[in-house]
View 1: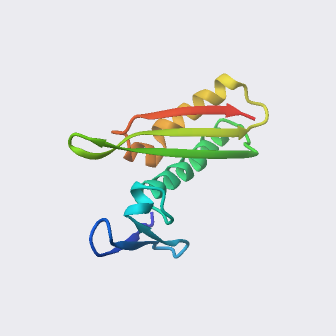
View 2: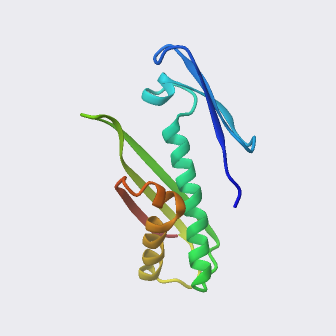
Length: 141
């Protein structure tokens, strides 16, 4: 399998500085700052990119699992909300809320819930983040 890379550069102090993050593929490059990470400033942040990676992984893994089970999903929208929190030991990600809305012909809700839960536990990004509590809200549309 291919090794994936991303780069980050930072200039200056924590609060006054700024930086850029870029994907090795060239598909994304964007600014980040203290304000974009800890306040409501413009730009991206590591937690947002982590959420995008998780939502993307979940999307593909759910489609793959449903396909292996004989279902052909038509469409899925997936969101990963990453919750950074200040703890005694410093900053931490306290939880990730996954939300999926999927159109899957011929599947009942119980079977869909089983596949969604299995995906939450086993997609590659979920496994990498297994120390973080994850909630799942999965619905058929």
